[in-house]
Image (cartoon, rainbow, N blue to C red; front, side, top):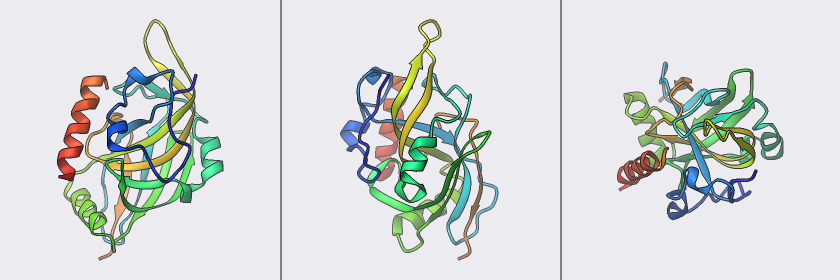
Length: 202
């Protein structure tokens, strides 16, 4: 069962297309995102941080469960350098680079660094240190998934990962970012998240 968008790692979907995300598009090629709560334990100033962008076996607020191995092919094909770091899924707002993206027994572990020379990255770092932003979200296309007819839960067995964003609202509360360092929906829920994200960019 396929349900995702572009295979290119750089340009993500337009804001208009991103607004279409939800369970409505299952069974056709549409972009999707998954949110994970961030826990900040250490904030310094070179802008580096690490944690989990997705956890295996956890049912998110959109009734999706990512299965172990779902990211492996995509990671092998793109590598960390081929996955973009964005703010609020905005392709016009790259804010850093991913240095390590890999699966372990828990989920999708990521390590990255915000670019201090980029004004938006400095703003994001300040917000993360203040606790105002506490989410990570993956942008992907579903390559292989299966929905249980009774429960409505969709299990994702293979996804094409093309970006990971720092975001405001978590869809998967259990996933955590373990450290930040710096040396100097439901359809109605999804629409509400998108409105809030757009408001932050204004």
